[in-house]
Length: 269
Ligand SMILES: [Ca+2]
Image 1 (cartoon, protein in one colour):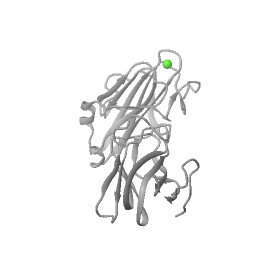
Image 2 (cartoon, rainbow, N blue to C red):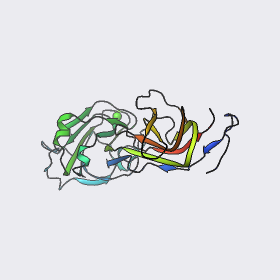
Image 3 (cartoon, protein in one colour):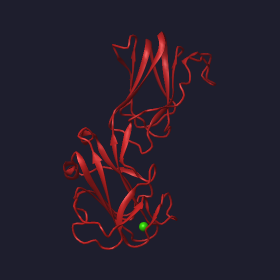
Image 4 (cartoon, protein in one colour):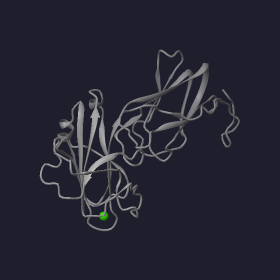
């Protein structure tokens, strides 16, 4: 590994300089992606569909198909792939969940302008009034979570325009635990570490562990409850370590997969 001094950090040696870009595989999964990452085909209609439109087995033969998101392209931050300019839109999307995925934390990810009602398998998952101007994570109601099952499921959305900008796009995200580990090659005296995450202005919760032998691990730093972001993220603890491992909890989810740009370990304070 390369050794280097960092400008402004004094004459210290980086035990491990740049490891390059390391994306965390499986950090999270967009069960139903939004147009932020992958525009997907929904069934949709702007004609009043009648009662039970949100039910799983509702017949949608006369609905149209088109890619997300839906709205007017002059709406700030909107990613429009299908024009929707009338007062109401009803949308449906089927998706699969494995038995294992069913146990994972799931959230809606939505951008609505204006009002939105969201259903999972016919049960109300969330309801929002007005507009939110950007994508955000939204909790799913306990009733709708209970209605999910392994196999095929149905996400149904009603969007309503009341004035101004116009847009609707709804996704379903799943969190999974992830970790990344580095081998310094031999046991080294480490005084501190730095981690550069790919989302420097987001709070990225993690637990950093260290080990001399790869078998017995101890906590180097616990950042599960941080309230402010810092980039790069620095931790200080003198240890004799060969391995470091960054563990990410299930509770974090960003539409853009979180990753690590760099991990550095230093033998000077
Ligand atoms: Ca509006």
